[in-house]
Image (cartoon, rainbow over all chains, first blue to last red; front, side, top):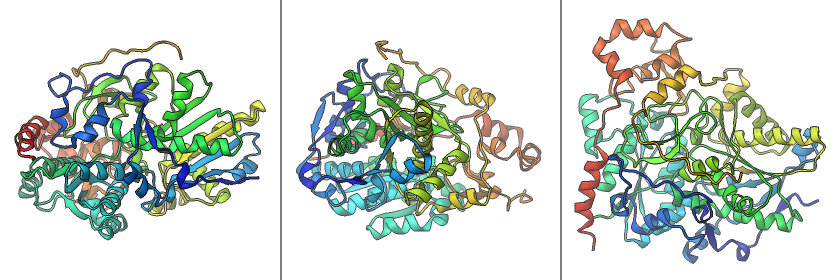
Length: 462
Length: 87
């Protein structure tokens, strides 16, 4: 039996897939703070025009530049694994596959877009990228990409995380990035905070504000801001994951996929695996496509479809997305990538259409699944990846109950070797489940009252 | 004020364990607006707030938006001026 299916470099997909071209109902336009649709020139201060064009593109296939492929070859194509040991443990008739994105240098799927963004920025004449980070996964991916492409990179890391998460910081510095504690004295936003509170531990909202301010205020116009999730072009760059999987499944002799699963925070790792399969579903295939989120931080399974800002500082554009409101702060869960409170607009629209069937899972079940996976398949997953594993185990058990030989695929989006504190707490019995109470949900939603609500456009086919 | 400072909790925003000391100054020196939701089961956090903050401060923490350090519009206007200079 084949456990690992690999592609040669010559077999790597040469184009990204853009779901916007195939969505049966149109994507709602992003809105500015005044409620009017934003225009490309409004984004130009923070993104290069070549990426803005991708952001707004409705082309189905977008060529991956050869120079980007040459960088991706460092770890791509990534292997597709058959989780035979997990299948045996579960005694399921399902065939379980996982796409191993943890083999990238920073250990997650995030460099797929970090490399592309860095390259397009360089092509546009940009010399320096800025971004913000909490625990450091995105910051380290962008630091890696900037080093390879040849850009300066500055990462604003929340001061307290900067002090408490030294290894991600060291990764960023090793790749040559400047990782600076936020608030810093290099921006007006940071200085204003520091003047008032010299010993402040910082916050994510401040870090985003600093990163954007640095990009916007560069008088030479050589600095831009980079975001690792949510936006269309970010999801586009990730589709290489699912496109590789389709080729690998064919090699593995699988003709039909039943279930596609990915954890879903801002949406990029889920979209990367799932969007090529969503295309199949749009064109008639019967596939269950499941984005998974924590029960304690539901954005897809319980919140209404509204416009919302992407950050607490309300500095990012208004985008149509499933959201708990910009004031919402998720409850304690060790899954950095799942902490974004709003879902990517493309994913939101696919949910509205009925193309996706979101699930939410409690963190204790996720950690239990992660442990099972580690003890069968051997890999220690990132906390957010454990949601996909938990959903996969649920589906595999369901297949057993139904006696069906289903083919299930999930995205192993990252390893957890720098996030062992959550495992430690789980193993010590210190974690607890925290379903979001209705009252808290109502309170959170109050913060978005008055914001414009988009029309729910759907064809009703799914 | 520092009575509970060494109590630990898993931070909802940052993804690692923190002490109460962080939570009551995260928001521009004032408590994080989620302080009640995170801590109500562990310490008498309502009483803590009443003892240490004015009504105006509590209102600011829980009822107002987080202060905009710089607004998107201001940044975009600055960027438009700057982008004209890009060759």
